[in-house]
Amino acid sequence: MIIYLLAALGMLLGISLAGPPGPVTAILVDRATRSVWKGVAVGMGAMSADFILMLIILLFGQATNISRFNNYIYILGSTFFFYLAVSIFRSRDTVQAKATGNSGYVAGLAIGLINPMQIGWWFTAGLSVYQKFGYLTMVFLFIGIIFWVFFIATLIFKASAKYGSKVKYAIKMFSVLSLGFFGILFLYLAVSGMLAQF
Image (tube, rainbow, N blue to C red; front, side, top):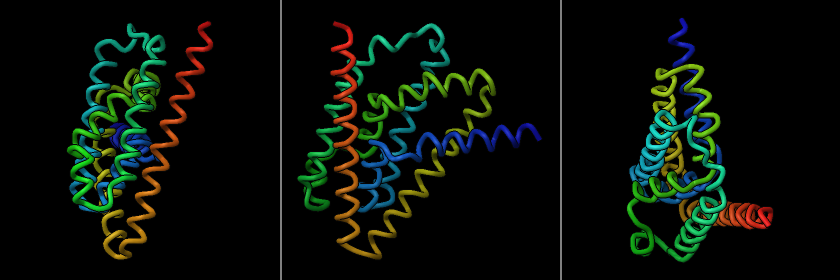
């Protein structure tokens, strides 16, 4: 019975990590309008980043103080999110998108490794969950992420295929505005953090 509870907890945590709107979701949604697998590739890249961050917290979590690097993480994340927003905004369709964007997997991995929200989650909630519930919950956490990635990529692709260019345009603008919002947010946090040090 306890195993089933830990499995359910892990699945819910995985969905809660991957599900909320954020930079990864914005890119995943944009790529999924062209193909389910392009969207899935973004999600798998981000999940690989989650795996790397999990290994870091398992090895160094309690001994690592990442708060001193927050401002640099915010600036790096903000710059990358602005770049992605501009790339998506300037792309007209799949031909230009291939020219302006890199591999979906690489994009997802890069976002995951510099996304302050993702890093922060693993060094706070992720570390706490591991310490309290152990490895099994972490295994099902990744199963939850995989389920969510396939679900959202399939849903977006079918919606864009059924309803056409208007849905694709709406999704494109959602991705651009989401990335722009997070770019501004993390730039603000970086500047605020630097000013607070003086």
